[in-house]
Image 1 (cartoon, chains in turn brown, green):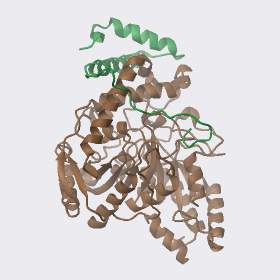
Image 2 (image 1 turned 45 degrees about the horizontal axis):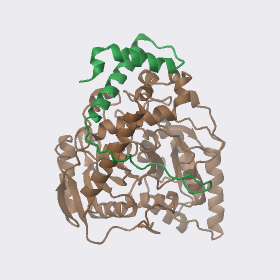
Image 3 (image 1 turned 120 degrees about the vertical axis):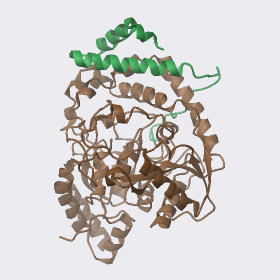
Image 4 (image 1 turned 90 degrees about the horizontal axis):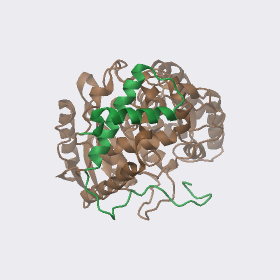
Length: 451
Length: 72
């Protein structure tokens, strides 16, 4: 079998069109790698071999007859197992749902199929996208997500399978989702480029809901360019802000650029991450002016927790009321989200009112800037046997995670070196709402400059 | 400082939440739920200190519905 691990979408597209490889060969290779490496990393829920070969055969036939659906045509991918797929189980990472079939395709799956992409597998994730408050890596029925760089480390969450499967070369890209860190954390931990779109830009129809006001769907790829190619396929052509014009072909940013630097974010991270961030700023400084800014003084973490717990308790109300949480994998998840029932409506609305103040403050902070930079995650992937109460106990350090997610802002995580135990670290670039193409273009420029 | 520090209100809230859920809780699970409820109460108490004006509205997050429209 031809071996094409860790090739970008763009390069595979060129190989397909030059005849060097066929969509069927790529699909067979993806299926084989998912069944071997993917399984070893606990990255896979279902390998969709039959569907992959059927879609690959169709792609090959179309391309042979001059029907070209664009850059994703014939490219295999994986979808986090919270996206519904007709005729294939959709588990949400939760043991009680491991055999459940939601007999429709999520909007993202439909969009990718129309773009000619080939679904090769449904990928592992933390149960309920981590919303039940896991405190260990073994919080899904597929087992702890192992890191593709070092299987003794965690792959991150909640899109752990999307992160490790792409980083291990099983697939050129995968779809992840993020409520609060679930694209950027596994992307950063596995050395991928991950993109979290503006809230609402990608349709959530057919996706599991954890927090209706915070859930987002986005690509996890090898490069920023690939993120742009996938976004062009899955982004809604409509948006409530007339400023967004999605590009036909992503290109590195070439105009003047003013990037804010989040004050204190490098210092608050692990030392190697801080040093890598400084090096990234030097690289950014080659093509952008930089100026420090301070994260608005808003209780971001308290807000995010209250909102996720209340919306999560509502989304899983029937599941919780029927006592189904007792069947979840992680013991601590069996009481998770129930605290959401204790929050009075006034307190939830207060959180949403403060959140709006935060949105306006972040927009003001970004006024005059094209984007803001910070380390994507202030620590590298922890050992696989880690418990998280200590790791996540101090999230009030200056990071863009809670603020960016609460405000629904687009951001990209870009690998920028290694840290403790040789594990990957990342830079995050976050832009203003609906500046998604610009954020991806800045990421492309950064990757162009840093090789 | 939360009123939950006295413990009495925490047990009332715990009882109310338990009554909603058809599940047998172990002693450990009840302790975990108490911890979650206490932390939630502490978060709400901190957020109640945030200065808001009467006109400060909630974050926009819901769209008008029309069948067939994107995102509906």
